[in-house]
Image (cartoon, rainbow, N blue to C red; front, top):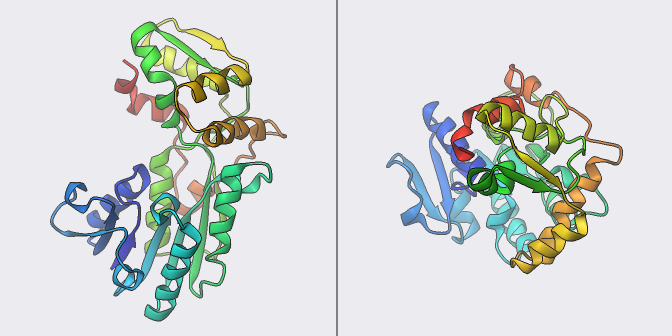
Amino acid sequence: MILITGATGVVGRRVVDQLREAGTAVRATSRTPSDAGFSDDVEVVDSTAPADQLISGCRSILIVAPVLGDAPVARLADLMAAARTTGVERLVQLSTASAADPLSPTGAYHRALEDGTVDFAGRRYILRPVPFALNTAHWWAPTIRTGRVAEGPYLDAPTAPVDERDVADVAAALLTSGDLPSGTLNLTGPQHVSPRQQLQVLAELLDVDLTVRDLPAADVRTRMTDAGVPAAAVDSLLRSFEFAMEPGVELTATVESVLGRPARSYRDWARDHRSLFD
């Protein structure tokens, strides 16, 4: 049995599907189990259930931070105590590349959670992906669909977005097999692709002319906070772009080394998700 926390998220759901296809028993957590939408062969439990109930009988666990609730460090401590008691062998923890940035609020949050699993006795893998390619749909899809316009800050930042499917596939592989030593794994796409270049890819695939506007970070912050986005979330987003420019995202071959195939490019992702923008 493998426990997948955050099972209805973009990474967790794909991990569940990968494990099911391999014939592995899966226990998935959700805040609303009745709405999780999994098949009957997946055991779905409330994410707020006692830690020993969640982990009982599991040999591997995937930890996703947002499901840890309002007291994440304490909740994680409970899960780790239960893991020690039941003899869990593998732990995969989804963190973020921002954990390497001492100035990132999001990074500080995730570093505290990484510290919370440091004493895990089995194989422990901390996944630090750069921002997902899917984020570009959240940023640009509405205005591209309605007005063929895309705006944003730091359009020439040397980012390397990772396909969220690759992150899930790496997690699934590490949960089940392999002799890779415990450690922190940085996940990136296969090449640097700035936001401006990402928009060029989208324009080519959609066969449209896009109006691209590079906005000052201060203007973006005002717009987002005025729209109700928490200031801390906005600051973390903007900081991720600044961090990418100091001195830039270092490309890794983690996806290929774990999966035995190249990481998907941003063009691959955009081709598969064209309908989001069209």
